[in-house]
Length: 234
Image 1 (cartoon, helix red, strand yellow):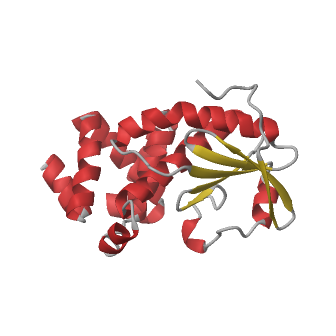
Image 2: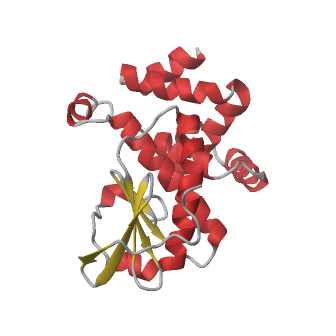
């Protein structure tokens, strides 16, 4: 791989508010970090470049432009910035989030968590661009369709970023046993990311990975989630 731990970081400097950012450009990313974050930036760049080919294969989609990653040394620094922030782009946790072709990541002290954050947010960037369109005309054309349910993107990103596990099984079983007249709609209202994660995992287990690609493709060209599922799964 072209990126390694010996890469020379610090090609350009940019100033956003009180952070003295340094940028590094790799094949698919422009990564920004500030003093104290150089080693974390190396870790993120290597991991991101390593995972992007698998993601493109999973989604059958290639993003033409580079993705910008802004890395914060901790959640406190992230909470102080207002770069590109809007209420609409926060994820359920209100921490890591995406904005167009930008990813905002923070480090919580655990590198495994950082990898999960990275994979989920990277998936969101690809999915949002895939469903909205590659250019302005496609974005306008898909504007009405893009009122996607929260479980669709959030859930698929969670499915890609985190394997389904015993804890997920227990959480789903608890909801189903303790909820009056349980349904997917109720679960999606209560926790859209978890509901979507469960649904995409079920689809993968029952119909295979190709079905997910088909659902995404057919939803996009028909500009209808319902038709995407109907035509793919019957």
